[in-house]
Length: 206
Image (cartoon, rainbow, N blue to C red; front, side):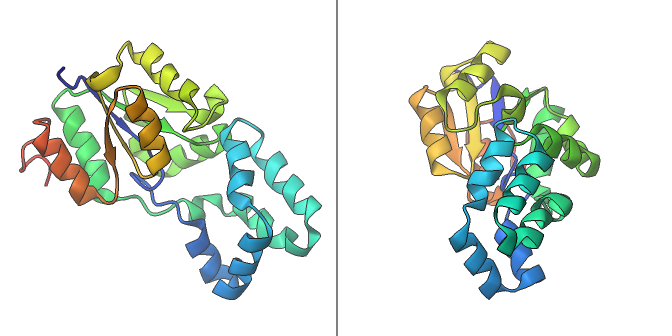
């Protein structure tokens, strides 16, 4: 079947998401390692991505862990600094696909409020044909329900969809539904895949 739409993850595909790196710069690598060993901050963030209130979750976690309260609140108060920078070539690839009238959708684990916040900095987040945000759907990748939402919303499924994500478990869940997949490890490999699928020429993917 011909690919009829391309689906982008956002974190670490279009925007770098490396909170550990930001904390290393702010509080030092040793204290950051101790904090991440003591607390599952990514699980905390998953609650936001499932649709819970951004400030409520982060500040509630801070209140429950007073030894780390200041550092935990930084996750909320400096969130845009954690979710940076954009990955320029990936953004160019997304726009090149749209310029060729290839439908381009986003499938992302993102909170309702954090996605709205990100859109204030990254204009390309408003350029997708359809955007499937876990916080609105109240289910996160790799749960099957979020992939079903894409299929229902686009009317497409199986190998009509090509999906790029940086996490192997998310790719595996999509592949199990018959989607074509690309494990994103950098924009150069993603560009090569889009060229090999005949979606972009080498010049368009530059």
